[in-house]
Image 1 (tube, rainbow, N blue to C red):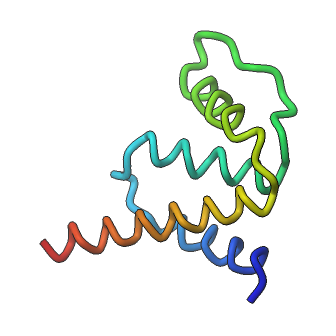
Image 2 (tube, rainbow, N blue to C red):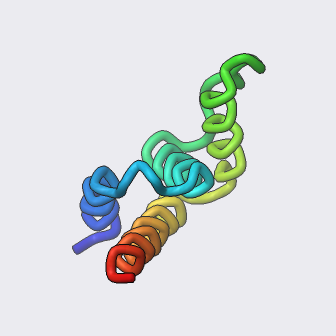
Length: 92
């Protein structure tokens, strides 16, 4: 399985993660997904009253230097980490 296929598989798995994961983790996933699928930020930064959209834009901007492959790999790693954390909390 190639990196792109594995990335797509984990993008589907990410949809099954619980809503209770931290906002920080959600932003990391968002930033790596956008960097992998779109590339560098290509929209203007949302205004100060769009707090959620602004946080997402800022996270994406931080990932801007990553290559597509690096962003895909980081995304997969983060989904795996979150799956392990969810499994551990369920087992506890």
